[in-house]
Length: 140
Length: 395
Image (cartoon, rainbow over all chains, first blue to last red):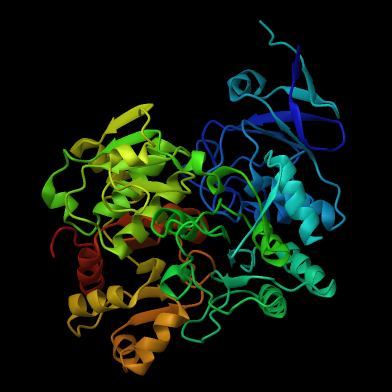
């Protein structure tokens, strides 16, 4: 199966398991910058780690410190392998822009409509540098 | 580097030009890890200076020395280096999340680049200045370059409400209570996400502190950068004006049941039989809010500490009037320059419960402090702190 995302920020092609969030998230107060675990006990994916995942984010809410948390995750080697957003978000993606300025390798960021996320959850996605997303269809 | 960051953000958001800005409020000087300090020091090493007025949001340290935190030595050192870097960049040492009550009030219609979600909501909605929700790093990059990408809430067409939130059916006793605006803000943020809405049917205009609490709660539960309140906020003389003369895409009629549900959601320990601390002041307390705290306390000593978070602008006035020492003697811990959810001030205590009247503290305390939350009015918070156990509705 093949989907096409729009590249928001360039990054290397990657194969990674998808983690689809089922509720909006505030990175600050919502993700632990040291462990990458989702830290808000009220969030449905509480406790899951986002490091190394293709993270599918339906919406971002809350604090304007999201970029600082994402930069710290990149700095500590615990960033998602790819970030897929329903809408471009300058607050979050600034973390990747600054990480690049600081000389770190940064993951690719894509825009893809959120109605695809439930299907992708848990599958290994092959994400190409042009935003193509390849994945195995569900086993029936 | 600052201009490259602004230009890259502009490209990302589809802005085709940059706008000159008059001021900035910088959220990026709060320590979250070494990476933020290293970024600020790189700006300093490149000779950068802010080119517009730039106030600082809370940091991780109480530089006034009123309160103590449990940051380990390495983190304290890096937070201190970050403070020095932002000072070297030319930022004003305001260290408050309520800069609009510390003398930084941009004029109506002016373009600014503000960070800190509650300050953004207040600046757009109550002052009518124009800012997007600037995140860490973009805020300082805009302050240095004096430019911001022209998109979103900088543009008149995006400031028009599309949703009406009708509160006219709510009980007058609730609307007059001091939890009304934080609870409504939390409900509003969750219901509206990032749309622009207009609250209709408000009989009594809320105070500035109530508007501050509404915006802070709305910006925590949703991604609200601008709200209108018909007959109250400057771009909403009435509902029709706020809607820009067009139709509403959606109308949400708020019921007493929705309000009860929203209030319940603010607590994670609704049936707590203990409290370990009370925290107030998110956003930072104004002098008027200290007046009210003192009048509710009536000189009594509290059995459980009340952490009262504020800015140095208010601290100076409290000290000048000799008001801080008597409060501290009675068990109030005044916290300045920072607050209890951004740096470890509360004692580490498994199973502990925090009582608060702040919608914003209620959102962030469970993940950032490990404390469960019991949400209540200021009067209930004070009576509970005096009694040493939760008393709801007793005041």
